Image 1: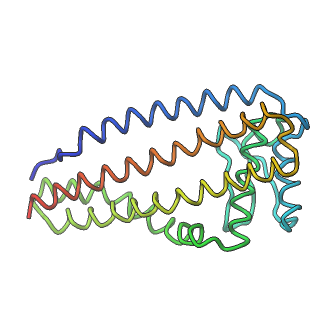
Image 2: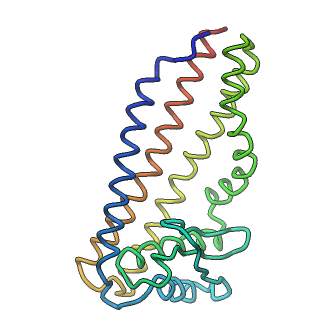
Length: 227
């Protein structure tokens, strides 16, 4: 069995592209973190207003450590904002906070894609730790059964990334709609900045899906040629 499949060059290209996209997100976030939003509202205040407006007054907004570590926890039903978002009245903080509330709204309406992603998260996190080991064991030990099991796990990861895309895009759509409808974005410049931040973040998920697809095709090709 060959370890390097025909899609290895594509994987390397996507890896480089992912680094470029991550760098773009960092630069975009840094730029708009230095620009105050027109209403001078912190990320926590924006999140609180949007939650209350959507009947989610029971959902707390917490501060967490880290940079761009913002997330919605569907198990604890909490909005968790990073230090640079929670107490900062910037355009970036406004956009990111609204995006995370978008996930809380998805949870309230039981968005099918969000529900599916939540159910897949725990088993997939365990499976993906085993997948590379199974693939390598299958290749070096000439055990096609292990290799195909690895293919299945990589396929499940691909499905997870695919389901994640509409979840993230919808959360950003909800965020921008709320900021525009309520006038919180306040100016064309702030609106453009919020959209830039969310677009840059969305591209990281697109890159994640592209990488998962390339890895799956590569491993599938290796397994098929070994049969």
